[in-house]
Length: 142
Picture 1 (tube, helix red, strand yellow):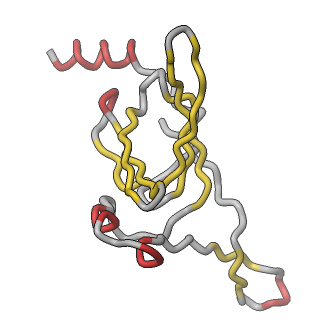
Picture 2: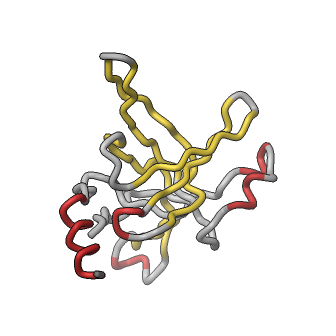
C-alpha cells in the first residue's frame, strides 16, 4: 500500500526546483494564478513565512502579511499548479520553525531581524571579518 502511495505521489508531483530555497522567517513573494471567468492573471502575495508543514505532495507553507492594519495569512501547497513561482526576498534570523507568536505582535515588534552574513576580506586582515549582506548560496529543493 505504501509503495502505491509513493508511486502516485511521484506521478502527480510538480517540479518545484524553480522555487528559491526558503525557511520559516524568510520574506517571500509568491506569484499565483487567479482565474476569473475566461481570464487568467498572476497576483503577488508578499509576506513572511510562518510555517512549513507536511511532506511529499501534501507539503504546504503559510505566508503572513499585514494589509491595511489587518493580518492576512495564506496557505500555499508546494505542488499546486496555481503557484507560478516563489522568490526569496530576505533571509530572516529566527530560532523557531513555527512563528505563531507573530499573530499577537503589532508594529515594530512584529518585525523579523534580517540574517547577517560575514565574509573574510583578504589574507592581510588576519581572520577579522566584516558584516555585510551579500547573496547567500542558492539551494534547491530535492
